[in-house]
Image (cartoon, rainbow, N blue to C red; front, side):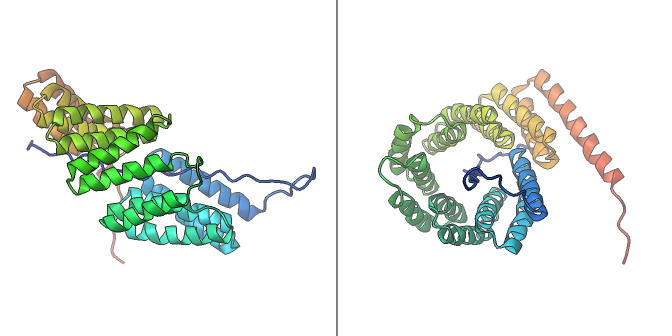
Length: 324
């Protein structure tokens, strides 16, 4: 096996849980939902479940379906929510341009309802940054902060500070990244949100890598993986373990490197992503051979054979294509 470099995970947008309260007039019993509303609710529930299990592509397909149903009904609440959630899924799979188009639709529907658009602006800023439009991302982040009322910002200032830190890291600007991250750390003390704590640990890992300190980066990615694990975001956890493995490898700390690559591969395989798992297996085997860690090599090879059997079995079971 050749030595494989595993990249640190990108900052990913978090799919927000949009809870819509239903109010009834007086003490009267609200009418039962129509079959169309019931089906719409069923599909959006399935979409959320798919995303939470780490299947952003499946969730995107389901949210696209529910968005179309909402458009049929001209329901601004459901159009806005489903367009927003679809955008979050598309960002997760790297389709930033399409995501931003749906965010514009969500923004229009929320404005139609006279609802705040702060969360839409923030997600759009994250998409713009991932798209490579740093200046636009900063301008959108400024709009987020400008839209907040005094004392009612929630986690938005923290998320903006983390975004600005990411942009500074993208530009390899160590002094600015550290200055922006200091602002984020102040805001971080006021939240128990594990996903945001994970994002902050990942940002700290990026800064450590910029400062040529991979050993410290590895510890930050370990912390990130643990936060994602406790938050139930297992794909992000697996990717963070891979980033930790690469950072340990760059530090020539080989045994922990093998362990993190192996655990990442095992989780990704269990989640059904054989290709990503095999990449982590390759990295684990390369590190294990370099370390001379026979015990790690044995269990990693066993995992490789398990994945190989699964992939070959799937190919054998697949129906052969026939001509038209």
